Picture 1 (tube, rainbow, N blue to C red):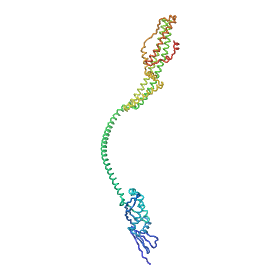
Picture 2: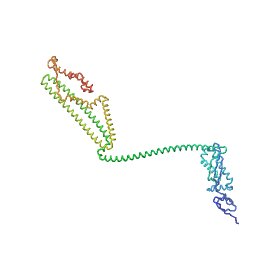
Picture 3: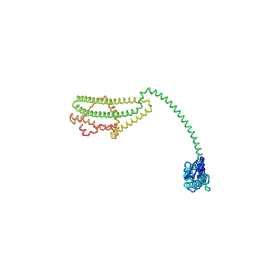
Length: 490
Protein backbone atom coordinates (compact mmCIF):
# COMPACT_ATOMS: atom_id res chain seq x y z
CA UNK A 1 0.00 0.00 0.00
CA UNK A 2 1.33 3.43 -0.93
CA UNK A 3 0.49 6.64 0.95
CA UNK A 4 0.81 10.06 -0.70
CA UNK A 5 3.43 12.43 0.94
CA UNK A 6 4.32 16.06 0.42
CA UNK A 7 7.65 17.81 1.10
CA UNK A 8 7.16 21.42 2.11
CA UNK A 9 9.73 24.26 2.25
CA UNK A 10 8.84 27.80 3.50
CA UNK A 11 10.48 31.21 3.14
CA UNK A 12 13.11 32.59 5.48
CA UNK A 13 10.55 34.57 7.53
CA UNK A 14 8.13 31.65 7.80
CA UNK A 15 7.77 28.42 9.75
CA UNK A 16 5.82 25.19 9.17
CA UNK A 17 3.57 24.24 12.04
CA UNK A 18 2.73 20.52 11.69
CA UNK A 19 0.24 18.56 13.76
CA UNK A 20 -1.38 15.18 13.42
CA UNK A 21 -0.24 11.59 13.38
CA UNK A 22 2.94 10.64 15.09
CA UNK A 23 3.23 14.20 16.61
CA UNK A 24 2.44 14.59 20.31
CA UNK A 25 2.04 18.39 20.39
CA UNK A 26 3.13 20.57 17.49
CA UNK A 27 6.15 20.46 15.26
CA UNK A 28 7.76 23.66 13.99
CA UNK A 29 10.15 23.30 11.03
CA UNK A 30 11.49 25.26 8.09
CA UNK A 31 11.08 22.21 5.82
CA UNK A 32 9.50 18.84 6.42
CA UNK A 33 7.61 15.84 4.97
CA UNK A 34 3.87 16.07 5.39
CA UNK A 35 2.67 12.55 6.01
CA UNK A 36 -0.82 11.25 5.69
CA UNK A 37 -2.82 12.04 8.76
CA UNK A 38 -0.86 15.27 9.34
CA UNK A 39 -1.87 18.86 8.69
CA UNK A 40 0.29 21.95 8.49
CA UNK A 41 0.00 25.75 8.75
CA UNK A 42 2.46 28.35 7.55
CA UNK A 43 3.05 31.23 10.00
CA UNK A 44 4.81 34.49 9.13
CA UNK A 45 7.35 35.72 11.75
CA UNK A 46 7.92 39.22 10.33
CA UNK A 47 7.01 42.04 12.79
CA UNK A 48 4.01 44.32 12.29
CA UNK A 49 3.54 48.02 13.24
CA UNK A 50 0.55 48.80 15.44
CA UNK A 51 -0.54 52.44 15.80
CA UNK A 52 -2.70 53.41 18.78
CA UNK A 53 -4.08 56.58 20.42
CA UNK A 54 -4.22 55.47 24.01
CA UNK A 55 -6.48 57.48 26.29
CA UNK A 56 -5.10 57.64 29.83
CA UNK A 57 -5.49 59.69 33.01
CA UNK A 58 -2.80 60.99 35.34
CA UNK A 59 -2.74 60.90 39.12
CA UNK A 60 -4.37 64.39 39.13
CA UNK A 61 -7.24 62.88 37.07
CA UNK A 62 -6.22 64.86 33.99
CA UNK A 63 -7.02 62.95 30.77
CA UNK A 64 -4.61 62.92 27.84
CA UNK A 65 -3.94 61.13 24.58
CA UNK A 66 -0.80 59.04 24.13
CA UNK A 67 -0.10 58.42 20.41
CA UNK A 68 2.16 55.37 20.16
CA UNK A 69 3.56 53.06 17.47
CA UNK A 70 4.68 49.57 18.53
CA UNK A 71 6.59 47.16 16.28
CA UNK A 72 5.62 43.68 17.51
CA UNK A 73 6.26 40.18 16.16
CA UNK A 74 6.88 36.56 17.25
CA UNK A 75 10.07 35.90 19.24
CA UNK A 76 12.30 34.00 16.79
CA UNK A 77 15.22 33.39 19.14
CA UNK A 78 13.19 31.07 21.38
CA UNK A 79 11.44 28.02 19.88
CA UNK A 80 9.13 27.74 22.89
CA UNK A 81 7.86 31.28 22.15
CA UNK A 82 7.38 30.33 18.47
CA UNK A 83 5.34 27.29 19.54
CA UNK A 84 3.24 29.50 21.86
CA UNK A 85 2.53 31.87 19.00
CA UNK A 86 1.71 28.92 16.67
CA UNK A 87 -0.69 27.44 19.18
CA UNK A 88 -2.50 30.66 20.11
CA UNK A 89 -2.41 32.91 17.07
CA UNK A 90 -1.62 30.81 14.01
CA UNK A 91 -5.30 30.67 13.00
CA UNK A 92 -5.44 34.46 12.82
CA UNK A 93 -3.68 36.70 10.36
CA UNK A 94 -1.17 38.95 12.08
CA UNK A 95 -2.85 41.95 10.46
CA UNK A 96 -6.28 40.86 11.58
CA UNK A 97 -8.38 42.84 14.03
CA UNK A 98 -8.16 40.02 16.51
CA UNK A 99 -4.42 40.31 16.92
CA UNK A 100 -4.57 44.09 16.80
CA UNK A 101 -7.23 44.25 19.47
CA UNK A 102 -5.25 41.82 21.61
CA UNK A 103 -2.12 43.93 21.42
CA UNK A 104 -4.04 47.19 21.85
CA UNK A 105 -5.81 45.86 24.91
CA UNK A 106 -2.55 44.90 26.55
CA UNK A 107 -0.90 48.26 25.73
CA UNK A 108 -3.87 50.38 26.82
CA UNK A 109 -4.30 48.45 30.05
CA UNK A 110 -0.68 48.74 31.13
CA UNK A 111 -0.43 52.39 30.01
CA UNK A 112 -3.51 53.42 31.99
CA UNK A 113 -2.29 51.63 35.12
CA UNK A 114 1.15 53.23 34.85
CA UNK A 115 -0.11 56.76 34.07
CA UNK A 116 -2.56 56.63 36.99
CA UNK A 117 0.41 56.35 39.39
CA UNK A 118 2.26 59.34 37.90
CA UNK A 119 1.55 63.08 37.83
CA UNK A 120 1.14 64.92 34.56
CA UNK A 121 4.43 66.71 35.15
CA UNK A 122 6.24 63.37 35.66
CA UNK A 123 4.66 61.93 32.51
CA UNK A 124 5.51 65.00 30.46
CA UNK A 125 9.06 65.50 31.68
CA UNK A 126 9.95 61.82 32.06
CA UNK A 127 8.84 60.59 28.64
CA UNK A 128 11.86 58.33 28.31
CA UNK A 129 11.30 56.72 31.71
CA UNK A 130 7.56 56.47 31.00
CA UNK A 131 8.28 54.72 27.68
CA UNK A 132 10.64 52.25 29.38
CA UNK A 133 8.05 51.44 32.06
CA UNK A 134 5.34 50.86 29.42
CA UNK A 135 7.73 48.70 27.38
CA UNK A 136 8.59 46.50 30.35
CA UNK A 137 4.98 46.12 31.48
CA UNK A 138 3.61 45.33 27.99
CA UNK A 139 6.46 42.96 27.20
CA UNK A 140 5.69 41.03 30.36
CA UNK A 141 2.12 40.48 29.14
CA UNK A 142 3.13 39.65 25.55
CA UNK A 143 5.51 36.92 26.65
CA UNK A 144 2.58 34.58 27.23
CA UNK A 145 1.65 34.88 23.54
CA UNK A 146 5.18 34.38 22.28
CA UNK A 147 5.39 37.97 21.05
CA UNK A 148 8.20 40.51 21.50
CA UNK A 149 8.33 44.30 21.12
CA UNK A 150 11.01 45.17 18.60
CA UNK A 151 10.45 48.91 18.85
CA UNK A 152 8.12 51.35 20.63
CA UNK A 153 7.81 54.99 19.72
CA UNK A 154 5.74 57.21 22.01
CA UNK A 155 4.73 60.40 20.25
CA UNK A 156 4.03 63.81 21.76
CA UNK A 157 1.28 63.82 24.39
CA UNK A 158 -1.99 65.32 23.13
CA UNK A 159 -4.82 67.02 25.02
CA UNK A 160 -8.24 65.42 25.11
CA UNK A 161 -10.96 67.66 23.74
CA UNK A 162 -12.22 69.91 26.50
CA UNK A 163 -8.91 69.65 28.40
CA UNK A 164 -6.14 71.96 27.22
CA UNK A 165 -3.38 71.26 29.74
CA UNK A 166 -0.62 70.67 27.19
CA UNK A 167 -1.79 73.66 25.15
CA UNK A 168 -1.50 75.97 28.14
CA UNK A 169 1.76 74.30 29.13
CA UNK A 170 3.06 74.88 25.62
CA UNK A 171 2.02 78.51 25.74
CA UNK A 172 3.77 78.87 29.09
CA UNK A 173 6.89 77.24 27.74
CA UNK A 174 6.71 79.41 24.63
CA UNK A 175 6.44 82.59 26.70
CA UNK A 176 9.25 81.46 28.96
CA UNK A 177 11.35 80.70 25.89
CA UNK A 178 10.53 84.14 24.41
CA UNK A 179 11.42 85.87 27.66
CA UNK A 180 14.58 83.82 28.00
CA UNK A 181 15.45 84.70 24.41
CA UNK A 182 15.07 88.38 25.24
CA UNK A 183 17.25 87.92 28.29
CA UNK A 184 19.82 86.01 26.22
CA UNK A 185 19.81 88.74 23.58
CA UNK A 186 20.31 91.45 26.21
CA UNK A 187 23.03 89.41 27.91
CA UNK A 188 24.72 88.72 24.58
CA UNK A 189 24.61 92.45 23.77
CA UNK A 190 26.04 93.23 27.20
CA UNK A 191 28.78 90.62 26.77
CA UNK A 192 29.55 92.03 23.33
CA UNK A 193 29.92 95.57 24.60
CA UNK A 194 31.83 94.47 27.71
CA UNK A 195 33.98 92.17 25.60
CA UNK A 196 34.77 94.99 23.17
CA UNK A 197 35.79 97.27 26.03
CA UNK A 198 37.71 94.40 27.62
CA UNK A 199 39.58 93.70 24.39
CA UNK A 200 40.44 97.37 24.03
CA UNK A 201 41.69 97.46 27.61
CA UNK A 202 43.66 94.25 27.14
CA UNK A 203 45.15 95.66 23.93
CA UNK A 204 46.32 98.76 25.77
CA UNK A 205 47.54 96.67 28.70
CA UNK A 206 49.44 94.26 26.45
CA UNK A 207 50.98 97.17 24.53
CA UNK A 208 52.03 98.82 27.80
CA UNK A 209 53.30 95.47 29.09
CA UNK A 210 55.36 94.89 25.93
CA UNK A 211 56.79 98.41 26.16
CA UNK A 212 57.62 97.90 29.83
CA UNK A 213 59.22 94.52 29.14
CA UNK A 214 61.22 96.09 26.32
CA UNK A 215 62.45 98.80 28.65
CA UNK A 216 63.19 96.24 31.34
CA UNK A 217 65.18 94.08 28.93
CA UNK A 218 67.06 97.14 27.67
CA UNK A 219 67.78 98.23 31.24
CA UNK A 220 68.85 94.69 32.10
CA UNK A 221 71.28 94.66 29.18
CA UNK A 222 72.71 98.00 30.24
CA UNK A 223 72.85 96.80 33.82
CA UNK A 224 74.65 93.62 32.79
CA UNK A 225 77.20 95.70 30.91
CA UNK A 226 77.74 97.97 33.90
CA UNK A 227 77.80 94.97 36.19
CA UNK A 228 80.53 93.35 34.09
CA UNK A 229 82.53 96.58 34.16
CA UNK A 230 82.11 96.84 37.94
CA UNK A 231 83.06 93.17 38.33
CA UNK A 232 86.30 93.74 36.43
CA UNK A 233 87.10 96.74 38.59
CA UNK A 234 86.14 94.90 41.73
CA UNK A 235 88.48 92.02 41.00
CA UNK A 236 91.39 94.48 41.26
CA UNK A 237 90.41 95.34 44.83
CA UNK A 238 89.09 91.96 45.87
CA UNK A 239 91.48 91.64 48.80
CA UNK A 240 90.39 94.99 50.27
CA UNK A 241 86.69 94.30 49.89
CA UNK A 242 86.32 90.57 50.57
CA UNK A 243 84.76 90.73 54.07
CA UNK A 244 82.70 93.93 54.12
CA UNK A 245 79.48 91.94 54.53
CA UNK A 246 80.45 91.12 58.16
CA UNK A 247 81.05 94.74 59.20
CA UNK A 248 77.81 94.93 61.20
CA UNK A 249 78.67 91.98 63.40
CA UNK A 250 82.20 93.29 63.90
CA UNK A 251 80.88 96.73 64.82
CA UNK A 252 78.44 95.19 67.30
CA UNK A 253 81.15 93.05 68.86
CA UNK A 254 83.49 96.05 68.95
CA UNK A 255 80.80 98.12 70.62
CA UNK A 256 80.29 95.43 73.25
CA UNK A 257 84.05 95.17 73.81
CA UNK A 258 84.37 98.95 74.03
CA UNK A 259 81.59 99.03 76.56
CA UNK A 260 83.36 96.35 78.62
CA UNK A 261 86.71 98.11 78.33
CA UNK A 262 85.15 101.43 79.19
CA UNK A 263 83.55 99.86 82.24
CA UNK A 264 86.88 98.36 83.34
CA UNK A 265 88.67 101.66 82.69
CA UNK A 266 86.04 103.55 84.66
CA UNK A 267 86.29 101.10 87.56
CA UNK A 268 90.09 101.35 87.51
CA UNK A 269 89.92 105.13 87.30
CA UNK A 270 87.52 105.28 90.22
CA UNK A 271 89.74 102.97 92.25
CA UNK A 272 92.77 105.08 91.36
CA UNK A 273 90.95 108.26 92.27
CA UNK A 274 89.80 106.81 95.58
CA UNK A 275 93.31 105.55 96.31
CA UNK A 276 94.74 108.98 95.51
CA UNK A 277 92.15 110.61 97.74
CA UNK A 278 92.88 108.17 100.56
CA UNK A 279 96.60 108.69 100.22
CA UNK A 280 96.07 112.43 100.05
CA UNK A 281 94.04 112.29 103.27
CA UNK A 282 96.76 110.24 105.00
CA UNK A 283 99.46 112.64 103.84
CA UNK A 284 97.34 115.58 104.81
CA UNK A 285 96.96 114.08 108.27
CA UNK A 286 100.72 113.54 108.48
CA UNK A 287 101.35 117.07 107.24
CA UNK A 288 99.04 118.47 109.86
CA UNK A 289 100.74 116.38 112.54
CA UNK A 290 104.15 117.45 111.34
CA UNK A 291 103.01 121.06 111.22
CA UNK A 292 101.97 120.81 114.82
CA UNK A 293 105.29 119.21 115.75
CA UNK A 294 107.17 121.77 113.69
CA UNK A 295 105.35 124.58 115.44
CA UNK A 296 106.24 123.08 118.81
CA UNK A 297 109.87 122.62 117.85
CA UNK A 298 109.98 126.08 116.41
CA UNK A 299 108.88 127.53 119.69
CA UNK A 300 111.59 125.50 121.41
CA UNK A 301 114.42 126.15 119.06
CA UNK A 302 113.84 129.30 116.96
CA UNK A 303 115.95 129.29 113.78
CA UNK A 304 117.21 125.73 114.04
CA UNK A 305 113.73 124.44 114.55
CA UNK A 306 112.49 126.64 111.73
CA UNK A 307 115.15 125.31 109.40
CA UNK A 308 114.39 121.74 110.44
CA UNK A 309 110.66 122.29 109.97
CA UNK A 310 111.18 123.86 106.55
CA UNK A 311 113.48 121.02 105.48
CA UNK A 312 111.10 118.33 106.70
CA UNK A 313 108.13 120.15 105.20
CA UNK A 314 109.87 120.37 101.83
CA UNK A 315 110.82 116.72 102.06
CA UNK A 316 107.23 115.77 102.78
CA UNK A 317 106.00 118.02 100.01
CA UNK A 318 108.50 116.51 97.61
CA UNK A 319 107.37 113.02 98.62
CA UNK A 320 103.74 114.00 98.08
CA UNK A 321 104.51 115.55 94.71
CA UNK A 322 106.51 112.48 93.71
CA UNK A 323 103.71 110.15 94.78
CA UNK A 324 101.11 112.25 92.97
CA UNK A 325 103.21 112.30 89.79
CA UNK A 326 103.76 108.54 90.02
CA UNK A 327 100.05 107.90 90.33
CA UNK A 328 99.32 110.33 87.52
CA UNK A 329 101.95 108.66 85.36
CA UNK A 330 100.46 105.22 86.17
CA UNK A 331 96.98 106.43 85.30
CA UNK A 332 98.22 108.03 82.07
CA UNK A 333 100.16 104.87 81.21
CA UNK A 334 97.11 102.69 81.85
CA UNK A 335 94.91 105.06 79.87
CA UNK A 336 97.39 105.19 76.98
CA UNK A 337 97.63 101.41 77.04
CA UNK A 338 93.85 101.05 76.84
CA UNK A 339 93.67 103.72 74.16
CA UNK A 340 96.39 101.94 72.20
CA UNK A 341 94.47 98.65 72.50
CA UNK A 342 91.25 100.37 71.48
CA UNK A 343 93.04 102.09 68.60
CA UNK A 344 94.55 98.79 67.48
CA UNK A 345 91.15 97.10 67.69
CA UNK A 346 89.53 99.99 65.85
CA UNK A 347 92.23 99.81 63.17
CA UNK A 348 91.66 96.08 62.80
CA UNK A 349 87.90 96.63 62.66
CA UNK A 350 88.36 99.39 60.10
CA UNK A 351 90.59 97.16 57.97
CA UNK A 352 88.06 94.37 58.41
CA UNK A 353 85.23 96.75 57.45
CA UNK A 354 86.96 97.92 54.28
CA UNK A 355 87.36 94.35 53.05
CA UNK A 356 83.67 94.12 52.09
CA UNK A 357 83.09 97.49 50.42
CA UNK A 358 82.36 95.85 47.05
CA UNK A 359 78.99 94.54 48.28
CA UNK A 360 77.56 98.02 48.25
CA UNK A 361 77.46 101.19 50.26
CA UNK A 362 73.80 100.62 51.05
CA UNK A 363 74.52 97.33 52.85
CA UNK A 364 77.43 98.92 54.74
CA UNK A 365 75.30 101.86 55.88
CA UNK A 366 72.54 99.51 56.92
CA UNK A 367 74.87 97.37 59.00
CA UNK A 368 76.56 100.49 60.40
CA UNK A 369 73.16 101.71 61.54
CA UNK A 370 72.53 98.34 63.17
CA UNK A 371 75.91 98.66 64.88
CA UNK A 372 75.00 102.12 66.19
CA UNK A 373 71.73 100.70 67.46
CA UNK A 374 73.63 97.91 69.21
CA UNK A 375 76.09 100.48 70.65
CA UNK A 376 73.17 102.57 71.90
CA UNK A 377 71.62 99.45 73.42
CA UNK A 378 74.96 98.66 75.08
CA UNK A 379 75.14 102.20 76.55
CA UNK A 380 71.52 101.86 77.66
CA UNK A 381 72.26 98.50 79.26
CA UNK A 382 75.33 100.04 80.93
CA UNK A 383 73.25 102.89 82.40
CA UNK A 384 70.56 100.42 83.48
CA UNK A 385 73.23 98.28 85.17
CA UNK A 386 74.69 101.34 86.91
CA UNK A 387 71.24 102.36 88.21
CA UNK A 388 70.55 98.84 89.46
CA UNK A 389 73.99 98.63 91.06
CA UNK A 390 73.38 101.95 92.91
CA UNK A 391 69.85 100.99 93.98
CA UNK A 392 68.20 103.49 91.63
CA UNK A 393 70.15 106.44 93.15
CA UNK A 394 70.36 108.98 90.34
CA UNK A 395 72.78 111.22 92.28
CA UNK A 396 75.25 108.33 92.66
CA UNK A 397 74.99 107.54 88.95
CA UNK A 398 75.46 111.24 88.16
CA UNK A 399 78.61 111.34 90.33
CA UNK A 400 79.83 108.22 88.59
CA UNK A 401 79.20 109.78 85.19
CA UNK A 402 81.04 112.93 86.29
CA UNK A 403 83.95 110.76 87.40
CA UNK A 404 83.73 108.83 84.14
CA UNK A 405 83.67 112.10 82.21
CA UNK A 406 86.86 113.20 83.93
CA UNK A 407 85.37 116.25 85.66
CA UNK A 408 87.07 115.57 88.99
CA UNK A 409 90.35 114.85 87.25
CA UNK A 410 90.03 118.14 85.38
CA UNK A 411 89.36 120.01 88.64
CA UNK A 412 92.35 118.34 90.29
CA UNK A 413 94.51 119.10 87.27
CA UNK A 414 93.47 122.78 87.28
CA UNK A 415 94.17 123.07 91.04
CA UNK A 416 97.51 121.32 90.59
CA UNK A 417 98.45 123.67 87.76
CA UNK A 418 97.48 126.63 89.97
CA UNK A 419 99.99 125.71 92.72
CA UNK A 420 102.56 124.17 90.43
CA UNK A 421 106.04 125.48 91.18
CA UNK A 422 105.09 127.16 94.45
CA UNK A 423 107.05 126.62 97.65
CA UNK A 424 104.57 127.26 100.48
CA UNK A 425 105.89 128.39 103.81
CA UNK A 426 103.80 128.06 106.96
CA UNK A 427 104.14 130.80 109.57
CA UNK A 428 102.11 131.34 112.71
CA UNK A 429 101.70 134.80 114.18
CA UNK A 430 100.40 135.58 117.64
CA UNK A 431 100.14 138.82 119.66
CA UNK A 432 101.63 137.16 122.73
CA UNK A 433 98.77 138.11 125.07
CA UNK A 434 97.77 134.56 125.70
CA UNK A 435 101.38 133.61 126.19
CA UNK A 436 101.62 136.03 129.14
CA UNK A 437 98.53 134.55 130.64
CA UNK A 438 99.70 131.02 130.17
CA UNK A 439 103.17 131.64 131.37
CA UNK A 440 106.07 131.13 129.04
CA UNK A 441 106.48 128.58 126.26
CA UNK A 442 103.44 126.53 127.20
CA UNK A 443 101.19 129.51 126.70
CA UNK A 444 102.71 130.20 123.30
CA UNK A 445 102.08 126.56 122.23
CA UNK A 446 98.46 126.73 123.28
CA UNK A 447 98.01 129.94 121.29
CA UNK A 448 99.47 128.28 118.19
CA UNK A 449 97.12 125.32 118.54
CA UNK A 450 94.18 127.68 118.80
CA UNK A 451 95.17 129.16 115.45
CA UNK A 452 95.17 125.66 113.96
CA UNK A 453 91.82 124.91 115.59
CA UNK A 454 90.43 128.09 114.05
CA UNK A 455 91.64 126.95 110.66
CA UNK A 456 89.84 123.64 111.11
CA UNK A 457 86.67 125.43 112.09
CA UNK A 458 86.54 127.04 108.63
CA UNK A 459 86.51 123.67 106.85
CA UNK A 460 82.80 122.70 107.32
CA UNK A 461 81.37 125.84 105.68
CA UNK A 462 84.00 125.56 102.94
CA UNK A 463 83.12 121.92 102.22
CA UNK A 464 79.37 122.79 102.30
CA UNK A 465 79.96 125.52 99.70
CA UNK A 466 81.95 123.14 97.48
CA UNK A 467 79.15 120.53 97.72
CA UNK A 468 76.45 123.08 96.86
CA UNK A 469 78.32 124.38 93.84
CA UNK A 470 79.83 121.18 92.39
CA UNK A 471 77.94 118.32 94.04
CA UNK A 472 81.23 116.93 95.44
CA UNK A 473 81.03 115.53 98.96
CA UNK A 474 83.93 115.42 101.49
CA UNK A 475 85.62 112.11 102.30
CA UNK A 476 83.59 109.79 104.47
CA UNK A 477 86.06 109.91 107.35
CA UNK A 478 85.66 113.69 107.60
CA UNK A 479 81.87 113.55 107.66
CA UNK A 480 81.76 110.93 110.42
CA UNK A 481 84.12 112.52 112.96
CA UNK A 482 82.41 113.23 116.27
CA UNK A 483 83.10 116.15 118.58
CA UNK A 484 84.99 113.90 121.01
CA UNK A 485 87.19 112.62 118.19
CA UNK A 486 87.94 116.16 117.08
CA UNK A 487 88.91 117.19 120.60
CA UNK A 488 91.01 114.07 121.06
CA UNK A 489 92.79 114.73 117.75
CA UNK A 490 93.39 118.35 118.72
